[in-house]
Amino acid sequence: MDNIVLVVTIIGVLGVGAQWCAWRFNLPAIVLMATAGILAGPVLGFLHAPPGAPDGAPPMQALFGEFYRPIIAIAVAIILFEGGLSLRFSEIRGLSTGVRRLVLPGVPIAWALGALAARQIGDLSWSSAILFSGIMVVTGPTVIVPLLRQSRLKQRPAALLKWEAIINDPIGALLAVVAYEGIVFRAETSHEFSSGQILGSLALAAILSVAFGVLLARFAASSFRRGWIPEYLKPPVLLVLVLVCFEMANLLQDEAGLLAVTAMGVTLANSKVASIDELRLFKENIAVLLVSGVFIMLTANLTGDMLHGLGWRDVAFVAAMLFVVRPLTVIISTIGAGLPWQERLLVAWIAPRGIVAVAISSFFGAALVGLGVEDGARLIPLAFVMVFVTVVLHGFTIGPMARALGLASRERPGVLIVGATPWSAELAGKLKEMKIPVMVADSSWRRLRAARLANVETYYGEILSEVTEHHLDLNRFGTLLAVSGNEAHNALVCTDLAPELGRAAIYQINARGKDEEDRRALSYTLQGRTLLHSGATLDELLRRHYAGWIYQRTRLSEEYPPEKYLEDLGDEYDIVLALRKGVLLFASMEARIKPEIGDTILAYIPKPSAAKPDERKTSAAEGKAKAEETPAGTAAKEG
Image (cartoon, rainbow, N blue to C red; front, side, top):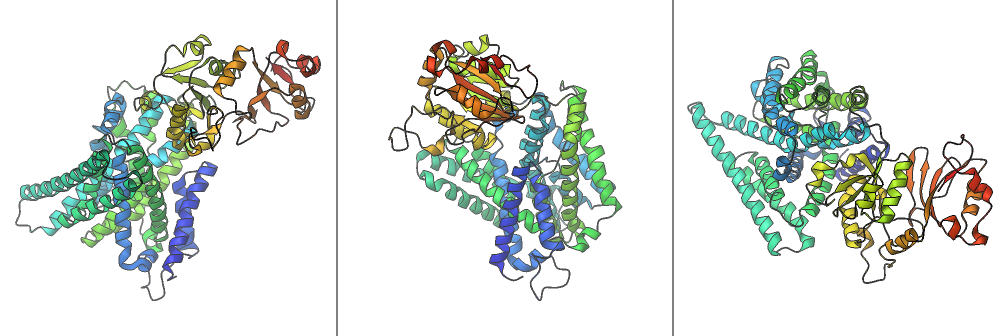
């Protein structure tokens, strides 16, 4: 295949398609992308070397020629910058002792033990062993977060694994860059120089690279704060600055650009730029696209010779990393951290590596081969094996192991209600009565009083605060209701938490009934779905509350079908939610609920004494309905 445009299109379709399938079917994205790349490359040959390429040549490398390595290098640089952009020092200060121990001394212990295992068991040279073990100290956040959601871990073990992955991700890349710089400098420097001189020169090059990255980040932050760059140009300007930082540092020292862009990302993340969240989201989108494309290219680039070159030592090394290095690292580093043995055991086992580890290993493996380190080529298949084994093993065992250790939450995904009012407190009380986990969050202790009196779990604090990330585990919730009296705050909550929960799971109370043509209305792009079919405003819902409206729960069956139920409701009602086969569906103007047999419906209706005579259908339906305890197949309503 010599049509490069077609190849790029296939790579994009396979990469993004695999990411979508992973989201849709709740599967590890890395497994699907690797499968797609292997099928398209070595197995089916859709992505193959062009005619005239040497036999046995990696197909992608032969196809892209001299552009292959720069493509991978730029992708890795942007990925490392995005990783640095997620590392905020305030987050480290706010973390528990357990997480800090997993970072320090956890990372140095994992690096040392991993290098020893790679050298003694995997039979890698010291250069390859030190570099590869530096990369493997990371646990991929793109893999960990979905695993935490599907396993539904309790808050503390979930926080340990989540924050370890987020913080160690850029640190592992940084260790690999530093190790590579040492290898390069030693390879290119005459043996006449002493070790002290070599280390001094390496330190100088590293300091200059880091300083350049820091200065460029300071310049970007200052430019953004002073308004020198308009909002719509900030993302592209930042992308260009990352490329400038990468290449300028590379001119100073080979591959020093990776160190510089990491330092640039960390500095910018801690510069308190007002638009940092939008920039981070833009970089995440680019990183997802690059990671998808690069991973497809790397898997399609595998050849039979690479895979056949793996021997028993490689298998033994991977086993040592899983069963010796990781457990010892966690056990030693968490001594005296106050963690129960169940949590230490779970964290000692769960350490899936992600896509970034493969991309960086592939980049540095090829670079080591160029320096004459022959076993550098083994890093690429080793990284694939490490990622595959950890993702599959840990992905399938985290749930059963968490349940066996008593660390899995047995609750169904709950509802987070942001905004405490008498109406929302009453709704929360009814959800709790239906055995649906619910929490009401508000920054006013006084407004939370009604929820507290209803014995509903509450969170006192600003939901958008960075501090909240350390005290509130959003993995517990599958649905968000933004129902405060401040429509701008509701929109901010929806916009901020949409990437975490998904836009389809976020609902917002109607913004005072304004339509899209109203100049006072917020843009629909900032809002969640409009709660309730009627789109009632908060003022209207509070009016109903004080007028005595009640929540009524009804189980539909063949004896009491949806048609009869809707007829009995009359003209004045609002369906709030439907519990269908264990799945919670909230009513909205955008997605109306059509009741079905087997559903449990929660409706908001006028109290019977306030209803008009002609609206009171037969009392037989009310008689059917007193409790959920009625046998299956019968109707049950509750006021």
